[in-house]
Image (cartoon, rainbow over all chains, first blue to last red; front, top):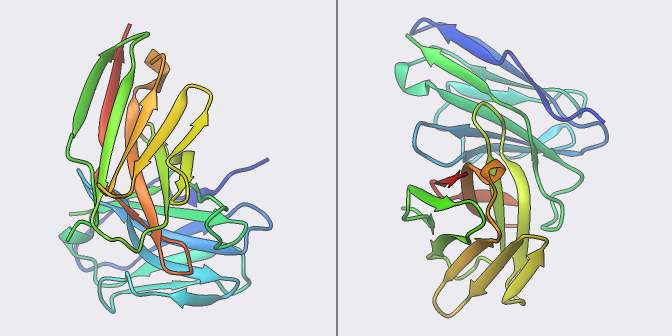
Length: 115
Length: 112
């Protein structure tokens, strides 16, 4: 079946602009996560959704970052007033549940470059 | 503060030999560990996991060992194949929502 789909695969934007990154999880997966991977680092947790609600947004770096999942399926990560330090690969993952035995399935990520 | 540490940025081995990838952790609350494999331009894919009630878990060519007293785990790949060349991440979930903490990764290169 189809895996986690992320669009666009690449996004180049100017400093100060607004961007939206989209994630389409595996059908039936109720848990959805956003991670950010900077060069030379492992993925870092941003936000977790269980269904439609953001159950844990403790990883969002500041209030310029916001994510939604209005119908419990597709999610959008929104970044306002982008800064060069926001440049990274943004990874979305989904799983059947948030239990330890339910591994995350990652998309291929969106590479964001802020110039 | 890195709670999951992979101190070797890279490892190179010959095809057919054993690859050993190491991971250390500092948080004694971790009770489950996972290894993910990542090819360039792709997302990480789940490889193998281990619960803290075990000290070994094996799946085909991949075995993970856990030493709780040393807060250390390792991934053994034997025999190594060129297709195993990838970045390997060690990760552990913290809290009930399965929020993963990842190490920085180790780039494994298996030479034919």
